[in-house]
Structure formats: structure tokens, C-alpha cells
Length: 194
Image 1 (cartoon, rainbow, N blue to C red):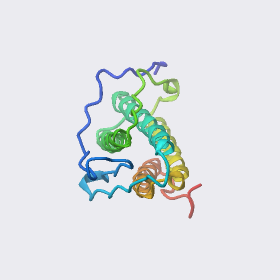
Image 2 (image 1 turned 90 degrees about the horizontal axis):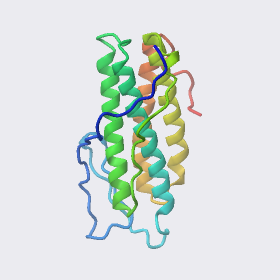
Image 3 (image 1 turned 90 degrees about the vertical axis):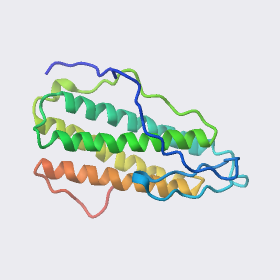
């Protein structure tokens, strides 16, 4: 496979999960949890600050989710995934789309502007020659996502956002474990994630 850069063919059409409004003025957005779970109640952040730190953290997570969406698209289009593995990759991509939708909506509710997906992502496509290569690449991205969310959870001013980020962290950890298992590796290599 030659090196190429992924260019999204269209803007992501993500379903709306923005169903939480607190009293008409939302100073610390509530985050709708994944898969239709109950929404978190928003807290008033008058005593906590302006929420700009939370917006920055959310936008960093959103940028990473867009990268994961693009990476799974590359994997799905590579022709290297078997008929039994490709649906799993597309399912995980769907999870990342749901994460991105929630994160973008939360940034907006906090009064920020969500980052956009990049027009192009430079992935190491020259190294993706087999299904195992694609799965190893995806597992590396998921492990990075676990670490990133783990680092973000304690940094939110709004603790409800920490709870939501921890929920996404759990999903990323499951992706990583499933991909490791598909590679024939121990799904959970250690008692702690670092």
C-alpha cells in the first residue's frame, strides 16, 4: 500500500444528542452520555470560572475523536480487513462519531466553538500491509485515547464533565482490549492503565 493522505469526502453528519438545557442560560454544559443514557445535570460555574479550560480540554478530545473517525475510515477502505473484522471497525468508528457529537455539542453549550475535523490526516499508510497492521495501528490510537482521557478526567472544573469523559475513557479502553484480543494479544495487559 502506498502512502496517501486521507481526505474526507464529505462533512461528518453526526446525529444530535444535544438534549440538555439548564434554565435557558448554560454556563457549564451538561453532557449527554453515549447510547441514549441519562444526561448529566449541568452545574452553574459562576464560582468556578469561565469554563475556558474545560472548552480547551473538550476541543482537544474532539480533535482526537475526529482523527479516530478518519483512521477507522482508512482501515475500512484499505481492503485489508476481513468480512468479520470490518464491521467491528465500523462499529468503533460509530462510537467515535457519537463521542465527537457529544463533545462538539458540549463545547457549543459552554459558549465555545468546536474544532473542526482536519481536511487531511497523515497516517503511516505505507506500514499498513496486513489486517494485523491495521489492527495494531487502531489499537495504538485507542491506547493513546485511553491515556488522554485518563489525563483529562481530573482537569475539568465542571465535575460532570469529568464523569462524561470517564464514560468515554471506558469505551476507548474496551476498544483497545478488543483490538488486542483480535491481534492474539492479552486483552488487558496490566492491572492499571498508565
